[in-house]
Image 1 (tube, one colour):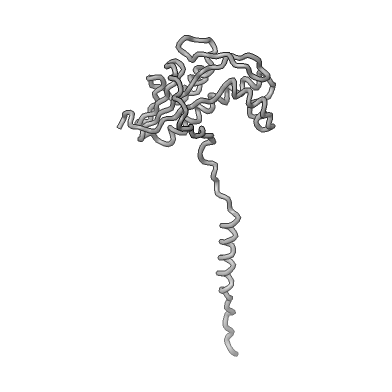
Image 2: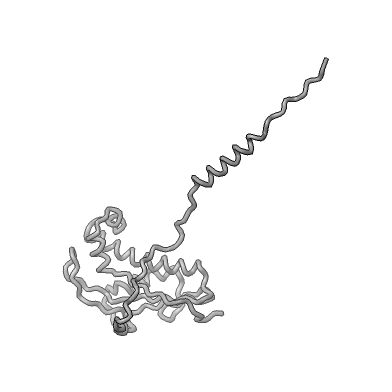
Length: 195
């Protein structure tokens, strides 16, 4: 009796199938690209525009991140966890303190005449500042503005600021932004110590 040989499996088409699956995976997969910050940069100024007037020191909130990942706020060391509350107090100046920003009267739709702070947050980083601290500082400053805007939206409209943005209530969002304008001035990184 003749011995039967084991049947061979044709693997040639398996390579084609694997290649097609790889191509399908590469074409259909989306990569997470949610990194970065949503910022709208100011437009370029025309060359013949006069210089802006100087800003008073009391209206500027200086935040400095050095190469040792230390945070200096108004010249004093501060933990990152305290930055949001300090920024909120500076932006709103609820008690009209002399050392905090001045306010000017502005007419805002829905709110009437409102005293709006002339605040500017000046953020400076060192060339050696870690990206992690840089992002933390950006997040804390953005959170300060968002919480103030959210408080105002809840108080005046009974909904969160985020809801107004999602529902595209553009006039209300614009009014709230006029009361709490986000003014973050970011200078180019330089060597500010700690190297």
